[in-house]
Image 1: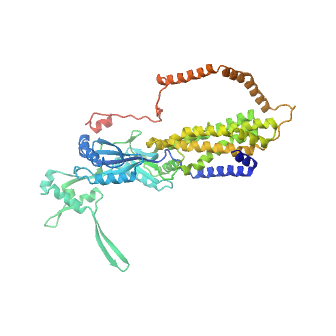
Image 2: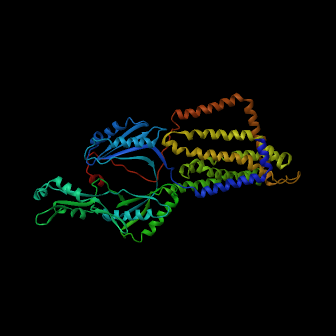
Image 3: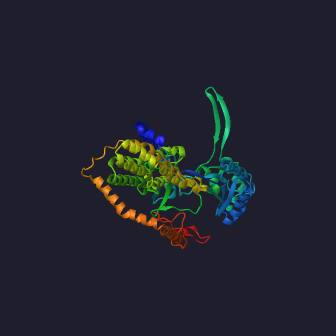
Length: 578
């Protein structure tokens, strides 16, 4: 270590090249890094959802959830099964054991669930998927005093146009009811036309479908034939022929049944600012930038108001990018404040050049950590920005110790090069172990299990590189720059303002602190007892409940959520009116 310190101090070019390389690498990585709200991650969970229209929660549990649990409980790699039954659907959540192959477990669960043949006939096909935490960036609320179909048409246009914007990939509708075409048959109508329910069902199935018709080889190539008979609208279903009479007239579905081209009959209603509404949700995927997505959506809203009807409002809502921008701005403010305070304090008590190069350790350490972010698989998000803010207060401790010791040696003999080498070498071991103890304190966070561990592991993956780059900078770059300190002021001259501040600090140390330290050392048992008493008092505060313990303390949010639970069977209209 001593030889390395001496070599870098003697070779300023190598130190400057290292500094420029770290700064350039950090800046280039920062320009290309994606910014997201929370890190995108898999949760090691699989959900199996089976819709069962019209069934009560008890029926769903007995007919759907229990059968799925019994079928998949023997799959290797499953840690826990949880089920949830609501009116009209059942969901079984499969938690995969840590270290198991999630893709293999997913395939096994799919195969076993698809093999279940005892589901009720009314139950729909199971939906089996891996749970992935997606990052929702912003929502667009389309609201106004109009009918539900018009709102949905406008929302679909907004969705389609937003998905065509550069940098925006995943956009979906939310808080809207799915389209549904329902065919209602009455017993009286069937008797009047001498038909059965099964005949109508077969006719609809036979007529509303697309069929391949083979191919024709022509001179210009092969032509594929296809019968396009699939009905998509209510009018097309009404025109389906159920029967052709002997006189050539046709009995159409619209004459026998009532065809309703509307929405699924589910208890759902969305209002925004007191008006009926539909929501368009924009997600960040891949390498997309959350701040850029939010800016694009807000810009689109301004231009879309030109074609949206006057009674319809487009509003940006639930913009999570403001939290990312706020955390980023907080980091910049705190970083600038910390840099200024370090520079000011060191300038007052030491030297301007020393203060400048020690303060430069903050951006060098941060940009070095940013340079390593792609290799460590982390991005700029709320968690990593919190890690930068957390380490901001300890990042230059080693540089301050090294710089102050170099200055002490320099004041003794006035040789800047010798002071840089000897001052750095003298405190190298304690400074290195001081940094490594902090690194050791954060290292266990990397190995936290579960979803919580995947979120919080970003903190040590930022803090540790920042500390290590700070250590490298204080041992190689800092002494190479401090060896160029100008000669000391000649003895007998009028002391400058920096010397006067330094002399004042020394007087305080000699007159106040040193006597107090001597007394504490002479009365070491009393000093030790006071420390132990303070430690026990701290434990007592926690044990007595004066200091509360909470893994995630409650924080006041920017929104208010009201949940109203009505008795089972309450009409939807009554719930909505409440």
